[in-house]
Length: 444
Ligand SMILES: Cc1ncc(COP(=O)(O)O)c(C=O)c1O
Figure 1: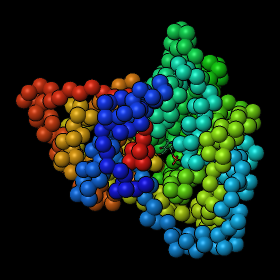
Figure 2: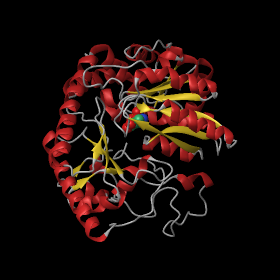
Figure 3: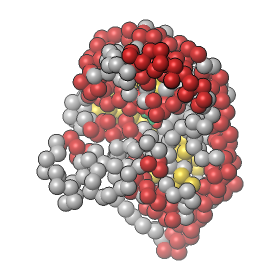
Figure 4: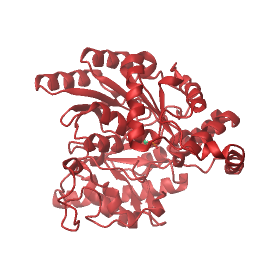
């Protein structure tokens, strides 16, 4: 669903809403209390107008895809193999695709066996399944602070408690992780998972330093915590650089999540899990109960694309497009942002994480920003514990470089006037902060 196609937001109609507008309010399961729509949705009717520059969305820029040859291939697929392509398949996934996924993962040093791969409906489904398999209500998931909003939504849906661990410019800080685990142990909490996005983090834009990786794995071993490595952006390093996957360093204690959403086509919804052998069988059962099987046609489309297209060349093209957009955003931030703002410098992926001056509430400011025709994702949505009110995620993946520069210029103007008001009146507004939200495609 594109931004423009999203249904108009009506307060009280989102799942789990406890407002009087919802006649089913007494019927929902307790676990739905943690399910709320992302805050940008509420501003959506306005934010998706063409005059608004949206730096909020995480939609990949697909303009460089070879649509004509893809269309020809899809029609060949139906003509030549339609009875398979349009039929149910196995929950495990199409065998040929699982073999090809091994070649994709080899680019980041992973030697996986096709048997240990389960194809999923995007890595979002993998997040749901892994949480379902491992987390009882009250179990703790350690996650970077900030973390991916869709993962926080899954953890909330299964009533897991998220404990955030702060990062620096080199990603997760091992000492912080150790301290958080020790504190949980002392409090008698059961920590099940470390959820981490080591490369080109969403939303923080940072990458876990290579020399921290072994230490983090070692700490997790020591505390008997399973690592969930979520890596949809790993092949989008702007200099073509890749980093050794955690999974390649400790295959028995890492569940690896991959996706074709950012390197091929997000709408096909094809992702995968590479799990330790014992976990794989449970994942297949979980997948069966969720969907019976991932869509056969989409898997065959991906498989044919990998077999016949220069997919590595296509990823290089994507990388170049995103690098140009990253440069536009960083250049504009340097040119326009007022004193007191700071931001991360991503060397891959889609996102910059911006910290605004003390006293500015990025969430409260969003409505004013949209009025000034620029939108962003405010930081509170990326924390389960209410932090992030001085932060926002700026995405450079989708708009043109010119629109990015214009969006940052407008945002800087909004910040300037916010700071002017603060200088005059003290603080501008205070608003309650919210916890994790169910992502829409607009905040993914
Ligand atoms: C870190 C992270 N994990 C998972 C996903 C979900 O991706 P998919 O399209 O494969 O479901 C996203 C999407 O933006 C993401 O950024």
